[in-house]
Image (cartoon, rainbow, N blue to C red; front, top):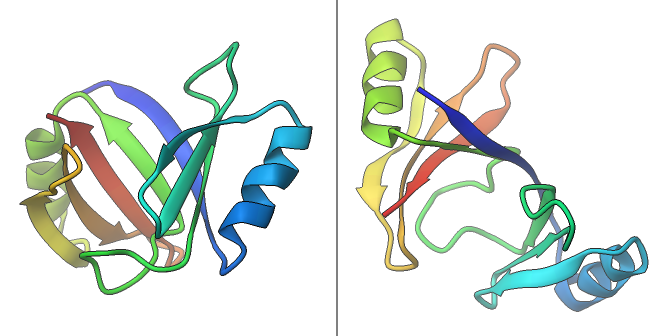
Length: 115
């Protein structure tokens, strides 16, 4: 399995202000779904930060997102390990397949793959 990127997720009601702030650091908006805004470095597109008010289809805002090349294999490995699945594996309307898992520190990780 290959990790493609890791993105910190910041829970906030200040989406526009956050987009503008990270713009001062050179980030540009690459996704805006109304409830989540993702900004990325133009020179290193996998360097990203997501800011969100809530998650449209999950019960919590994940602390980070990890994109992998085979989300089904990641899900099987995590499930078989006995780790707590916080949000089941599912396809989302915005083009990702994902699940949430709690790490040993209590942090929620959104594991995803693009379809």
